Image 1 (tube, rainbow, N blue to C red):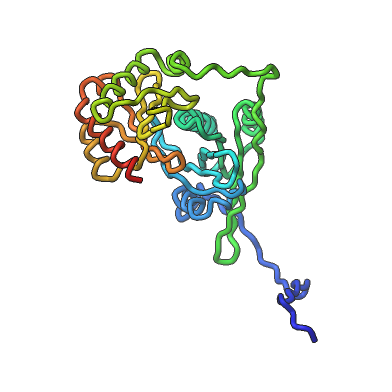
Image 2: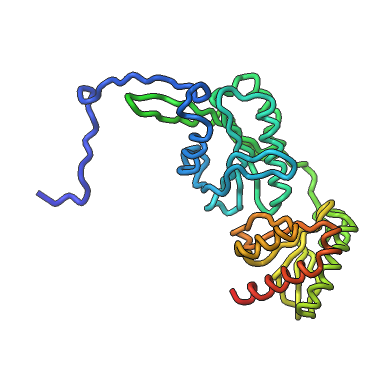
Length: 306
């Protein structure tokens, strides 16, 4: 008899299978399996949601004005960098859950415009009423609705995630969109005249660290060039009220504590773009020159030592 390279798997027969009753569990009314437990299950295995090859990025992510995003997930193998802003609710979804989901999605897409973003709403019960409301947003807001059900089988609990509403490609105008030229006026419109001037001030600080740099206006940021070559040890994103300074390296814990002690708003490190953002107000740009100079020197030294 020839040797078999792979074992033969015999399918179970009707006689070999036994019936096991299944009990549906309400997570909302269960003292042991709460929302925190559900968060951990998804964090440990994000693929359980059925959204593809996704990875966990952040949990209870603080939002600019108020609240925290339950989960931030990311598609790591897609050609387009994509993030999922996930909000979870035990029991039936309601108005506040839906509004919160869309608000946090909007916050994240504005903070990180170089990613595609999709809002994900998860609940034990997505009623037909709310499914109709959510459907109205889809096509204008990329939105996925997932219903989660918990089942008790013998002494074990199992979860089933069912996508009840898939993301619809965002509706775009039929006419051709002409991209504006990327120049100073583009950033004065994207931010403000005042916040672009804050970048001018920081550029004079850079001259004290190393001269010879000038601005290169791009779609997603204002970079630096020297001798016609990009030198982005720092880059700039003028916003409506603040100037975001993106450091071209990861800031270590000790230096971050120093900056926070100086009152600077140090945001989370972005591993894909390899920048560590700092948000600067107009007042800080004027009064925190010594601290900003230390940031620029830190960025310059660490960026070129990589």
